[in-house]
Length: 233
Image (cartoon, rainbow, N blue to C red; front, top):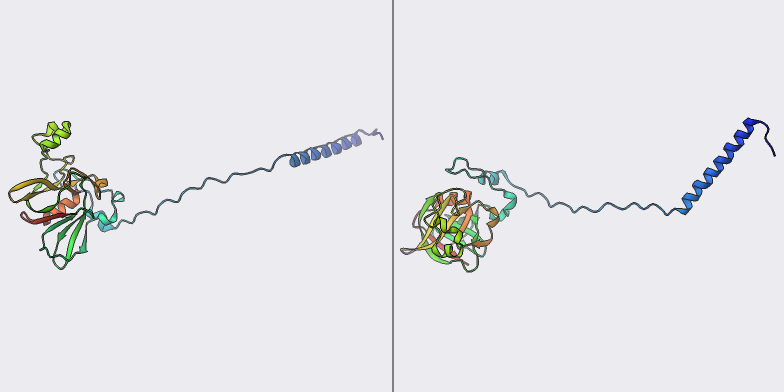
């Protein structure tokens, strides 16, 4: 069969070309493996945001009015149970007594009516801890820190503070210190402040009991010199 009409020839060519393209397309579809789309990697759910009350934020606020300004505590780094709070605490000890439970990592200040003000604390690491019954001889605001000779022997870098490190936010005793004596003897143990929130609830100090700056200031304002202190496991 021949096509003398150029228009008819053109139509026949296009028709045959369409069939060829269709056949090629069909061939690609049957010969190519199915397209597999990988599922996106699963993203672990974020832990729920810790609820922090307005009262807690106020309790651990920044204290620019202090001799050395104290920054606010990052409460996301502090377990809620270690925040300062009033708890039921029946005790045979009289109000004003300080009790440190080193196992629980709590300090209790006995109050009237079978309650206590409870603070989270950091304590001495193994070999540097102390326990017993004593009294708080005196308190100091922004104290000078003088490292004991045996500590200087272990850490020669402290030699520069042999005669005392001046007060300040970086001073190891922090904003306040309460000095523990047995009879007329200084035990060399202290209740003192710290800005290292991660140490609360831990046993890593050189024997002293540490509280957050905001908590040691609160405790300092409540405790009288001569008050009994009991440190127990």
